[in-house]
Amino acid sequence: MSLRSSLFKRYGVRLLGVVTIAVTTLLCYQVGLKTFHHAFLTSDEGSYLFQANNFLEGRIARDAPPFGRSLQHQMIIQDIDVGWLSRYPPLHSLWLVPGVAIGKPYMVPALTAGLSLLFIILTLKNIGVRVGPVIVLLLCSPYFIFMHGTLLSHTSGLACTSLMLWSYISWMVSRKSRWLIITGAAWGLLYMGRPYTAFLLAIPFGIASLLDLNRQRDQKALNATLVFVLSSLTGV
Image 1 (spheres, helix red, strand yellow):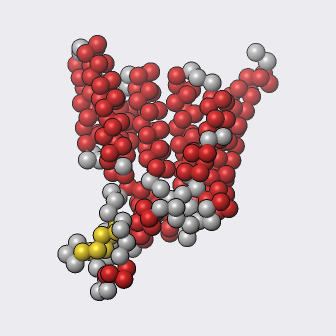
Image 2 (image 1 turned 30 degrees about the horizontal axis):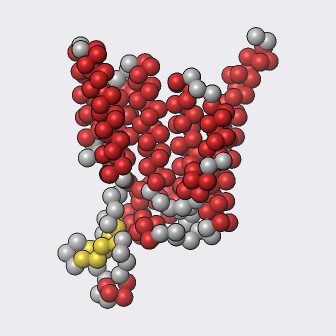
């Protein structure tokens, strides 16, 4: 292998990955701006944004408004005792806080698209699959691009799921327990944003962990399983 090809393999591929992630982020932001005009597609987005503003002000809930009926919103709770807050779990609203703080909440889902793409690339490299075709398919996917032009929690949910998949496969390759801590924490974050999705994902990952424990039948495998379970419970 020549020096030039060796340098390209080492640095050129990384640079190409950075450029791809940057293009993905820009494309998703432009879709939100030019196609959706940064308007809500569903009432859920208003609920997330409302709660993000609550969090930005350092509060979980505002006082319930005195004329609540005129401000009723089906995805926002209004209760004299509980207050005025989103009906949804907190993760996605917390996820949006940096964007809300600078007046650009739609920048966060766009950046999240790049983050998810990074985790997907790392996962593919771990299992020896060619990265290029998968990236092309993702960039041609209306679901992937258009979803990240919204404020929906599917965006942060995909990032958590991608992180979970990458770290779990990294554990399978290296058998180092620290990867299971990350896997469990990623699932815990997903549970804080999309509990039902997290519950469904827990089934195959849980079965895989138990099957691995059954195959290994040693203290190290038992410890790894316990690490996975305990780190997952942090989100619960």
